Length: 344
Image (cartoon, rainbow, N blue to C red):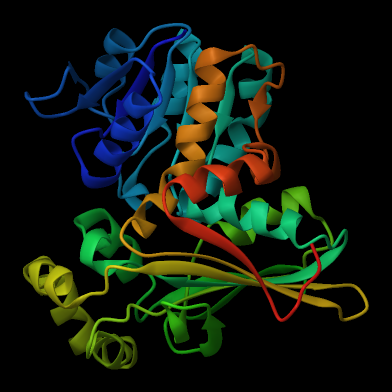
């Protein structure tokens, strides 16, 4: 079995991924900038990456926030010959990787970008919808804030507050005001009704690679923290409020974990040519936050155990098998549901 290195493995999601891999019997090395990790690595320092990571490694990249990351890790992978999969939801990061696709394929390595809630689970939901030619995907995130209110997650959310964000509309990327557009969705219990606000995700770039018919891709989030949605709506409309939020958000994380819900879910509405609509959801109680790392854990195990023939920048729909993902999430207490009587 190849070595699995969890970069950012001392952080919340990195540690969760490492624990799940170990529970499955994988040999895991935790890598981070701090001295407490098994392997000391700076994800943005090329010399550090080249000295610590080796040919044949499987590197699970959980070192967020990805909005501020460069392509240094993938450049090191091209030079050293190891595989990379990340849990990024950043559209900017996804775009930065796309020009490297020819070099990734030529090097014979594998890079799985967005092997997380966005975009691997979005792709799995689209495949599970059974609609061969989807034209619209709308995703709704109801995070388990009691667990997920962490610095990297908050930074990702705030990146969409009060600034133009990019969505896919009419077959191309368009800029819309972040957080101002709202949509409603009914998730199964224990979640119930959510009112999501528009935020930016990598789905707008990654999913049309798998389904060229996708003309409209948008993502919405409901924090479900009392008062926070309203406060962020004010911040989105008034620059001084946004500046105050950006200056003080770290102070609010303990309160968000205290007030936030422990359950969480993801809902999807997929529309096909001709107007057929399928609604699907993944919901869970105590361990719903593990949904974010589940695709990367499955993919890392597959790469480590090998052999895997596909090389290159792997599209979101080919990173994990949808049925295997559903089965794995079920072991974590996260249930897949087809809504509105959608057929299997």
